Image (cartoon, rainbow, N blue to C red):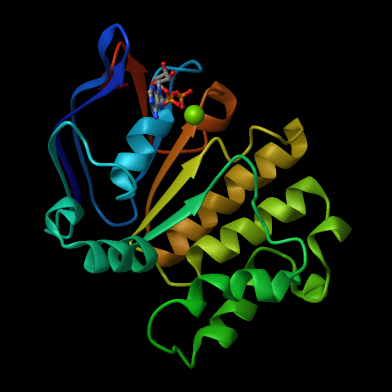
Length: 221
Ligand SMILES: Nc1ncnc2c1ncn2[C@@H]1O[C@H](COP(=O)(O)OP(=O)(O)O)[C@@H](O)[C@H]1O
Ligand SMILES: [Mg+2]
């Protein structure tokens, strides 16, 4: 379960503190999906970074299965990020010199050896429809295919929480729809908590729960 309680975030600016999130509160069960909508600059990426243990909130708490990552010492916090959270960004950020399969294995280079991982990576690439592309380099893939690799990479450590920050932002409509459908099937198959930031109503409509981020306040539809 993910519990987000009274989360606030202000950035420092020369003109004083810049409040971005105010009292964001919600909770999600395993397998829940939430689309966070709002225009550019409303704080979607800020919220996802806080949830993913990348940037501490100014106040409030995030708990994933009872653990608040910001109360952990740094090595455990990094481990939490690596093991419990998967990220998919607008830009796929694949390593250009590595093959599709190697890119999916990258998150496993940190931490304890995981002998079942290569098998899991192949299965995930099969699930995202890329079993015939294992040895391709990123430049040999279409934009939609690169995002599929990024999804497989995000899932390879079987995270409890999958955070997707405008994952369809660089895709045409057909590929955007395909990526949204793929995220939904991955969520269902793995019972992952999925949170997707998007400014597209059409993309958000694929997910069971939808919320608007307005003036730093998250309001569920
Ligand atoms: N590291 C930062 N330092 C200062 N201000 C920031 C920082 N990151 C984001 N902001 C500001 O916070 C607001 C929300 O940004 P962001 O979370 O990226 O919004 P979104 O993802 O919805 O476009 C914006 O006004 C942005 O300029
Ligand atoms: Mg953003």
